[in-house]
Image (cartoon, rainbow, N blue to C red; front, side, top):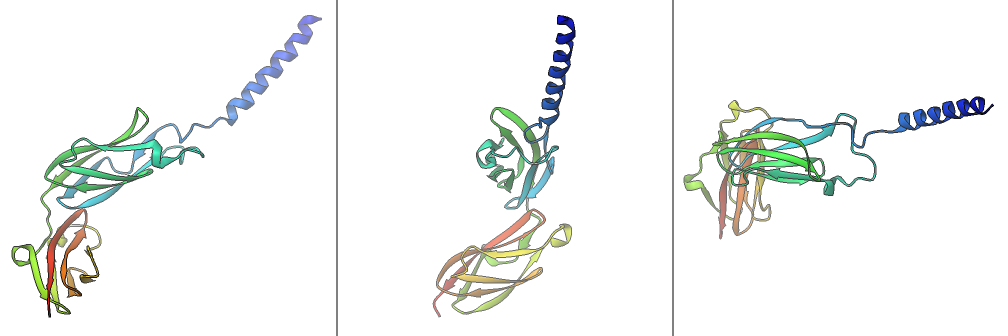
Length: 200
């Protein structure tokens, strides 16, 4: 009699355990990887890396901004500015470094980064452009034909100088007295020059 009662109980326990196991999901998937395992930048250039899980995003309740640790093996060559599962990688000087992302003490993924001399250049005497207030000049970047991606021009301070992009050519306008940096980026490479705005 006892054996007849014991057998159904064993089967019931096994069924419950099976249901519990089926409902378990690995936090953030079973393994993580970066969208790029190798990256080539020019000095001054940048690109982004994104960490993904084969099972989807990390489990609800985790804070990616605090759980992911991004590091560079040589910050004199490559620096990393991270936000959660994405990071901007910046080329500082020629050389190579490895960017690694970890969670706690566990290394999740890495990317080998090579930094070379920028292939972009803007012809400006001594890297400086001196203009009077309200003056406008046209500048051109060279080397974009060797690179893939959009050409992006930007000013470090639009209250002093603005830049209007027209592809490889840009119009730089002096707004107010002071100094700012005009930078152009394309395909992980960049070039820049200093704009100095004087009096009228």
